[in-house]
Length: 168
Image (cartoon, rainbow, N blue to C red; front, side, top):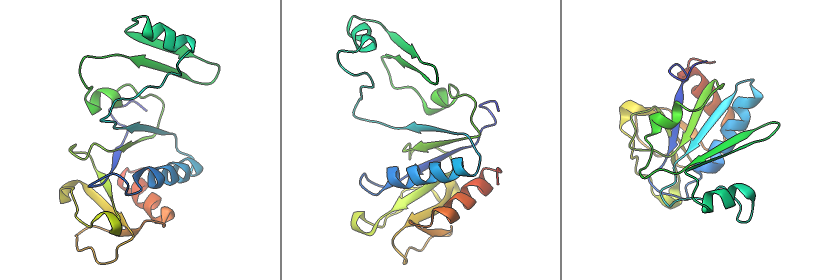
C-alpha cells in the first residue's frame, strides 16, 4: 500500500501520564493479531537518542555523520540529524509496507484520533470534535458526541479503529 493511501490515526491526550503508550501498545497487538501490518510514530518534544553509546553507529554519529543507517537481517534503522523538527506528513511518507499507521501524540494535527482521558489527570477533551473517533477512558460521565470506550476494552477500540480506517 502506498503511503498516500495508508490510514493514519493518532492517540492523544491533554497531558502525559494518561496511559497513551499502554493503550497504543495493546491496540497495536490486537491490530497485528487481526492480520494487519502496523507502523508507528511517536512524538518526542524532549530530544532522544536511539544509538547506544560506544556502539559503531553512535561513534559515527559522534564523529559528525549527518545520517547513520544500520541494516540487519530482519530490520533497518536510519538516524538523520536535522536542524528543524520534521513535519508529521514527511515522516509518514517514509514508512513503507504497512496497512495502517498509529501515531502517539501530535494533538495539534488534523488527523483522526482517539483521545485518552483518565480521571486522575483531568477530564478535559483537547481534540476538536471533527477529528475525534472516540474517547478512551476510565470516566463514565464524559459528555461528548462520539463513542466513549472503556480504556480496558481493546476489542471495541480495535473494531472502531479498523472501521474508521476502512480496514475492518
